[in-house]
Length: 443
Image (cartoon, rainbow, N blue to C red):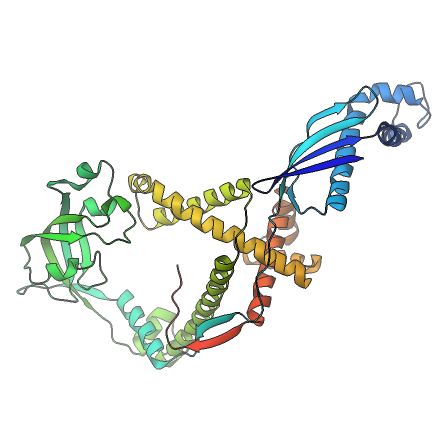
């Protein structure tokens, strides 16, 4: 075969193939012989029909199978000769059976990027201790108490730090209603009725709760705040928004006593000591997860700061859309309206694009580490992993795996397992420094 590969930017390559007439003739003869051996033609015994009769009757099917076979052979030979790492061979174009009996076609290939690995052994990562302290357990139990709290009205005094204020508010920018001034939806910032606000510095916007303190039920107040530079809606960053606030009610939370009765209520009959042990185990699991995430984030940041390479545009576009869909889904679950999501569309896609680029770069780097270190995922490991997923979903493993095969999702799952193994390898060879601070992970 005459094979020419022309590499292009953005991980693309043009493959040009010409298959000699003798190769085409040989492969066609093999296919025709296969049809002749099985075909049942009226007037002829099975396997005895003349080749020209077979070719005439099954001409379309024979040509289709011939084209498919020769294209696959060309792809295989291109991989061997050119040492290509092909992600997608694309659809053959300009496939021609030439007058001299040869076959020619071309295809646009999507190639894996050329990754020059940085040092990936002995990377220094910092992580806090996974020890569970009494303070950790107390904080967990306090959170449980707050979940089961009762709320009582407060009367006869002004709002204080720690109270729950029930407010109505609207907002304005430069004297105009906020959404009118912006020309688009502003989400919850535009106003709410019956809004419950915990009066502490972590609620709503910085400085807002402090200005509600001192108000009595029935009072109104204008609160002017400068929107922080990290606020999701970029059009408002650094601008002063005025909130017109009316205090409709004050409430305080009444926490239940931390005793055996409370423990039995939240656990279905366990004692307080047993509840504390449960809390400890949950915290241990969560700390291990956070610390693992903390380490992995540092590994990802390390790789992405040292290595840069072109990414396939189709993959980047697909990954960006997936990340954007995930961000939208997260926004919907958090209560954002369609108008709010539309208003933040540009920010959503910018964030999704950055995350997609990081994800793909990290994925290719880890795949290259796996290749270099001879790390692989065996068929048995894959089957066991899929069986565990099926079991967790209470599905029949065989049917579950067949459905994954039908939808073409098996290679993606195998790749995720391979990347996970590569991460484990890097972490095993990392130098871990213990720090006192707690890790911070994105939810």
